[in-house]
Image 1 (cartoon, rainbow, N blue to C red):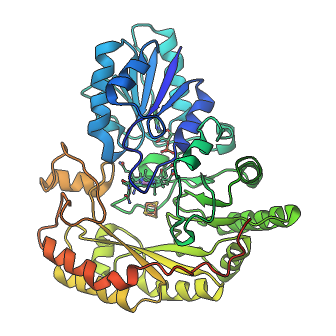
Image 2 (image 1 turned 180 degrees about the vertical axis):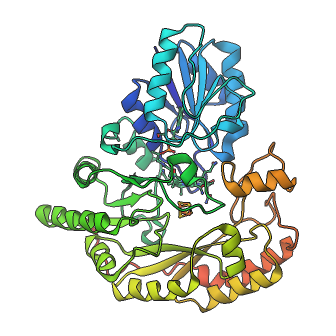
Length: 436
Ligand code: B12
Ligand code: SF4
């Protein structure tokens, strides 16, 4: 079977790019070509042209590019009889021949084998597989326990060097252009159930980990072969298993000492509070972390409960103090405009942000993300419509959804009032030894 995987246009903005790490794993289980539209200037007709001659075309779908992907699919259909498979966080929102939801390495390989065996496209059932245009498949619930078996990501095949030339930076804003960066995902799965998040649906609720040896080998390749000097762990919860995380930090420290090198790390999606202790934080500092991102998300207990965040705000100050004691900066994520929020909730969040000991707050406007429990809830109540999904986190004007008790003016005012606390301090990581 000739398989083409497409990383569609829309995965790159003015100052951000999403690296196609997922395709790196998929290509380990299914031999394929990759068309990366973030790196190649090709319009949707050009993409359809490139798809000619393939038996299967797979396309990644995220919430913000569903319409674009649908257009690509429609154009491919006019030129080719390839079977079209969609995957990724928002695969269920487009109409293709097959939609394979969630983490997909093993099931994608199974699907390709079955397609090879059945020219008519009768593939039977596979967990999380939707067939045809009308189905809304259920998320699969069981995923591979042995992550190492998914193989080593070939960053050359994903054209990491071209990403660097194109200006790929991830979580580098405090360091400007000092370091060359690359992403790694060391663990998958999250046992929490925050209503605004699609993470657990995509990768399941069980925490699964690569071996420490696997992670160190990847770090080694990134450092020596690709010149990477800062690594971003994309994990939803890198430190959830604190014992494992401590062993990882110790292994990183030894690796750096053995090779007499400098390398910095980030866990930019944040870590949960519960398992953070001083020993772990000090090890992270020693391993090369400069800041820890935490996610209180709101200063209102009522909103936190609606978010199903499972977080006690009293614990937050205690943990921020530990972060500081370990010599790290503390960054905090917040969401404002969450469904059901009132002016009183906003006031509590505002006071919380203004009085907190965080070094910086990142305030995102609430967006209903397809694949999340709150999205389904808002669909059911009729507060949102599925057709148009446009995610944006900073511009109040462009917000698609504003919760009934709030107004755009109130959200704008909130942004102004906390603006001072959201600023970067240029010299934050000044104490970190900088890599050559
Ligand atoms: C890291 C990350 C980012 C990073 C990406 C950095 C990078 N990669 O270089 C950044 C910060 C750029 C980012 C941005 C955003 N992100 Co984000 N991100 C993630 C995160 C944590 C990991 C993504 C990742 O790389 N996973 C690793 C690989 C191995 O997995 P994967 O990509 O999912 O691929 C697997 C499957 O999806 C599937 N698959 C993928 N493609 C295909 C194709 C086919 C054909 C098949 C069969 C299968 C398949 O198989 C792959 C292997 O198992 C996920 C949550 C998560 N746990 O996955 C959220 C997540 C994907 N992000 C999300 C969102 C909403 C965003 C933003 C819109 C938010 C924002 N603040 O702006 C932006 C988008 C960019 C923008 N500004 O508009 C949502 C997506 C929801 C949705 N339905 O689209 C997620 C699920 C988190 C959440 N809050 O729920 N993100
Ligand atoms: S926000 Fe973080 S803790 Fe909550 S469900 Fe998503 S990944 Fe898990």
